[in-house]
Image (cartoon, rainbow, N blue to C red; front, side, top):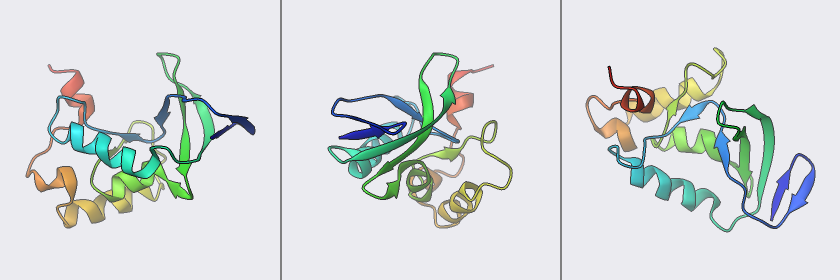
Length: 123
């Protein structure tokens, strides 16, 4: 079941998680990041708080699955970056990312991981 903008749905809806960016599918940790998100949200009740739409028309928002905020949890696990371009300067996500980096969790196990925005747009 999905609660989206105070309406209840029983169908799948794709939402881009606000303020974070995860590795691309073919990028290092891309598959593991997707698996981690599935552990958090697959077949769970999700609540989406829309924050807008991206340039591709996708809903961007905060997603909470059974009480767990999916975006911050992905960052805490080292499975996503804070998307500096869109995250507020005082977001608690930065502290979560710093802790994951210090503990070498997930993608931070790599000494120089490539952010997805650089991977997608090589120079």
